[in-house]
Length: 356
Image 1 (cartoon, rainbow, N blue to C red):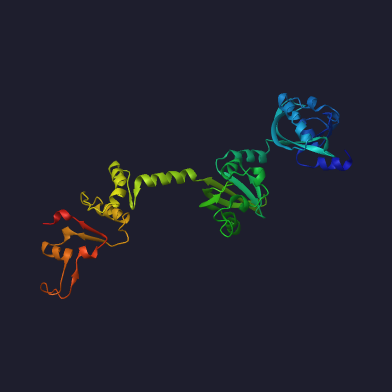
Image 2: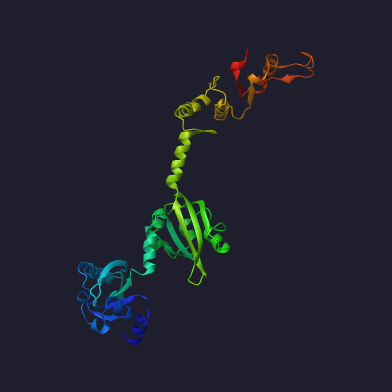
């Protein structure tokens, strides 16, 4: 390793260790010295298996170096590492990369170790543990974080989604001028519980509820946006089932007696027979009549209602059948009866039991 290499590795955030093809450590940076608990001079030239005395955890890690030599990269593999001075162990994330040597050959591997107790790692674990999808975008609308629930809901893996524009992944009903993240960025305020639909990777429409807010750095500058979303498919399906079960036209009821009525009313509506509706005053007989009417072949024809109990016997006949001008005193013009007015449609005679 030349001085430039050493300077570069010394000032990167993660601990960096280079292991040659013989399994010997040939380079470490300052962070690696701290995380392992040994000065670099005591590490260089030693077999990696002797330095990392973690049993099968690190042995398994080294066994993964073989596919790395073929160009594979292993990212964020959790292991426990024993500190060389105090003997304690700490949780770290290991990323293994090949060192290219030309012509599809490698000159060993580089292992980057990151302390998994760091706040950023803990935050990532928490984000991957929540049931809601979470993703972040930068100021160019490129996805920078995509949690595990987001992968499940969308069908996109984090590796595939990160780096793409959010519109490529979501194809939602509000992409563009109605974007929730854009709205929150422009207003500086959160957007909460907005119901939309988007298409998952297979093209299926998924109903979701979204909330978005600006993403700021430690100085309060907006550096992007964060959005959480919840899959409403199960809730939407349940709502449809409840609607079919407890709803008919404009009526809603959980009563078992009404459920039986709801079950037969479509058949009644398809019939041309006269229907007798029984029930106490105020129980909704007119609602039943209108529901049958709306679901019948006569729904495009008139619906005429007459409260028979509100008319005296002397006027009831003329209301039902109409009259001609001069038929009686003050009958100055023809009047159409309710039967004629409902021609081809439905005549609802309320309180028909009050007719003499």
